[in-house]
Amino acid sequence: DIIGKFLNECSRVVADIDTSATDFYKAYVGYCHEVGEAVISQKMFGSRLLTRGMKSRRRGGDGGGRFYWQNVMLTSSHGVNGHVREE
Image 1 (cartoon, one colour):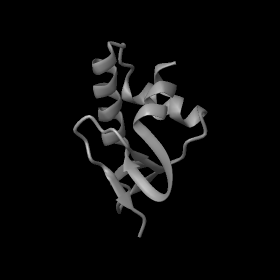
Image 2: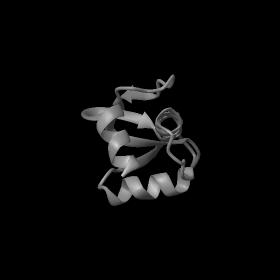
Image 3: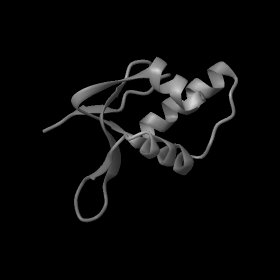
């Protein structure tokens, strides 16, 4: 299970830290390339994270903004730094 390996090796649960969904996916893609695994789409990746119990939300105003994964941070980002502290 490549997503499980990615989560175990490249992220950790941290209260009050949100990570950009885009940056989280970019880190996953980098990890897959590094270990020689096929990459799934960002939409499928997000669906798989939701089935694992992860929560996301939109941040930003007027219906726009970016999606973030809640209470998770990248520990090995493959060149991406997308986590933010909760306000």
